[in-house]
Length: 359
Image 1 (cartoon, rainbow, N blue to C red):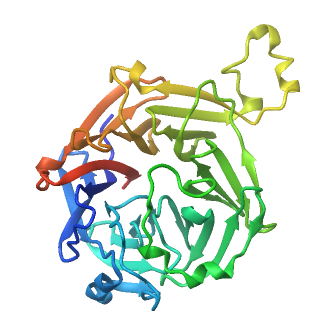
Image 2: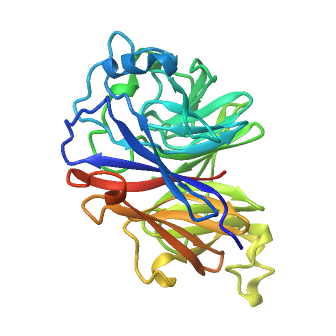
C-alpha cells in the first residue's frame, strides 16, 4: 500500500525564552508525499502585540486590545491542531489560527481574537471554527473573520456557563508559566458530531461531551487497565483512537459491541455492569520500535493505518518521528525529521510533532 500524502504540524522552542525573532519565518509544517519527497514550510509567528503590525496585510479578527502586554516568557513557535475544510488547511498556533492554501501551502490569512491562547485541537466546518481556551476550560466558536460567535466554559462541576468577562482579557499574550496541564480539564482534541462537541481531557483521560443545544456537559469514561495521559482522540469506523503522551495508543469502542476484555464464562453477566467505552492498548515499547518514546502526540487514521508522532521533547535528541502502524501494533514505517536538516539546532531545546492530516 502506497503512503498517502500527509502533513504534520510541529512545535519548537528555544533555550533562551526571551529570544524574539518576529521578522523570521519559522518551520512549522512537514509534508510527506507518496513519491517520498519531503518538504518543510515556514511561516511568520507574531507573538507580542507589536508583532501583529507586521502581518496586518493577512490579518483577520480582533486586533490586540489596549490592555495587552508583552510576554514575560515567550511561547513556542509552530503549529498545533490541523483541520482541512474546502480548499484550505487550518492550523492552530499559540495565539492565532492560520488559513493555508492546501495546494501551495502558502499563507492566506492569520485569524485571531483575544480568546486564543495555547491553542490545541480545532474543528472547522461551514459554521466557522471551534477551538478551546484550555486554561479556562472554554470552548470558543468564531467565524472565518475571527469574530467571536459564542463561548462556553465547563467548570470542574461540569456545569456550563457563558462568561462574558473572559473577553476583557487578551489571552493571546499570556504565558503558560508552568509545565504540564492547564485548566481543570486541559482540553486538547476537538471534534463535532451534530450538536455535540467531543473534547479530550488530559487530566481525566476521557471525553468531555458538550451539548450545544442543552448547554450541558457529561463525561464518556473508559475502562483502562493502566494509567494514561490522553492527548488526542478521534472517531474512525465506529472506534475511537487516542494518543497517550507516555507512549501508548488507545483504541476504544462501545462496551456493548466489544468482547476485548470479557472472559467467555462471564460474557453474559458483564453487560449487567456499568461501563461506557472499553479499550485496547498498544504500548509502543512492546512493538518493533523496541523502546518507550519520550513523547507521543497527534493521531490520524488513514486506510486502516494509524499515524502518530513520537519523541523530541525537552532536552533530548532534536528530532521527532511519524510512526505508521496498524491496530495490532505492527509498524510499517518510522520517518524522522531532524532539526539539523532545516535550521540551526544550536539554540533549540525541543521539537515535537503535534497534528497529522491526510491531504
